[in-house]
Amino acid sequence: MDSENYFSSRYLTIVGHVQSGKTYEEINYCFASVKRGFPVFFITRNITADQLQLNARFIEFNKTLKKPLDVFLLSHNDIASIAKRMESPCVIILLCNQFQLKKVKEVLYIYKGEYNVCIDEVDFAIKTKYGTSELDTILNQLKEGANHILGATATPIAVFTTQKEMGKIIKIKPTNNYHGVNSLNIEMIESSITSDPSTDNESINKIYSSLLDKHSAVLLHTVTKKKKNHESLMEYISNLFPTFTYIIYNGDGIQVMCKGRNDTPFTRPKSINQYGQFINKYYFDNDIHHFYNYSIAEVLQILVDDYYQHTHISIFAGQLASRGVSFVSTDYSLHLTDQYFHAGKLTHGENYLQSLRILGCYKDNPILTLWCSEHSWKLILDHNKIINSLVENVEGSTKWLQKIKKVIINKPETPLSRPKIVSKLRKISKSHFFSLDISSDEEEI
Image (cartoon, rainbow, N blue to C red):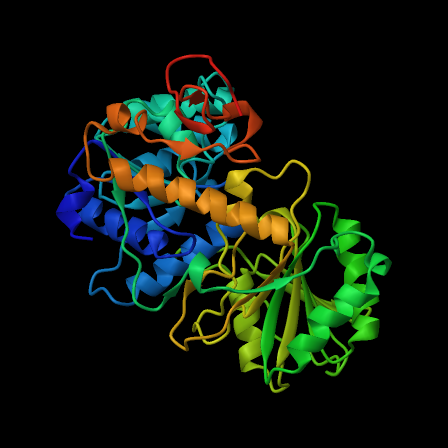
């Protein structure tokens, strides 16, 4: 996207398919903002892994510049030093929680200049329909004081239904090597392999045996939020398929188990660098390699560089894999080839689309396989069609608010978004067709 397009309205939202290059645009936006003389508050989800991944992307971006951007973490600096550094345009990365947003408010009591705001997963930063939560209130105050705001998401329902002050929406055109929903190879698995691993050996064998038929494969095995289920699944399946390298990716760091490899340490901990990265920690204990404050990209790269050939990898992940994170090595040579996805009872449209971490830009033209139920696949297609229809009808228009109310959609079987910001639909006569209703309190789904 041309840098001038970022500033075509004061509050711009860019929409693109899942993992289609939105982070690249956000980083370019920060570069363009700094060139114009504005420091940028870059807000990520309230998950440290997202911050780690973003910081690593900025480090790679800075390698292409003669004069690197000054990028640092809000949490690693005190209020006075942040305000001082903002006098020269810089990028401050922070998590979307009320504690770090309050710290920004304190910084702005000292720093009196202008600033821009970039919000990754902007729809997820919206917590309530009417902006009544403490986080919504503080974030809205930060946005009101900003010179310019850029948001980015693949699922903009919450933006459409709450952000009336937004000026324009621009859709990112995916690159030629982007592999989206329509490019997936679908294998139907009706059962749940997300908690109790012994419930369905047949499905486990079908998936993992199929992966072994390939020369190499990387599976994202999505599971429940309960961390004990991650460990029990890895223990159970690793006994059935011992040649795989297994990874648990959750809030307890990253755990790697490889029965075919000895206990030689993978790596040594790295100390903090000039960009404010965390001090990394690593240790080996009871057949498990533990990585703390490493991004999943760094750990995958360690496997790529290892003396042992990790040809088949299975990654167990729950909530951390629900959106935002890319399962790809830092040199982009290793990426997902398969994903097992099972929808829970409360899964809504955002979940169905954002959970597809297998989508992405890949140079090797891979065959990507999604293992899911027939019903889940139908709902993925339904919600994807709704998002595409809404975005295509309002893209590029400053009158998006009026236009979006006229877009007619089929009522989906599951809610479009989260309960606290559930989008409203207005029924069109007695048919099964509906449209988004921004202003009234008619039927909610």
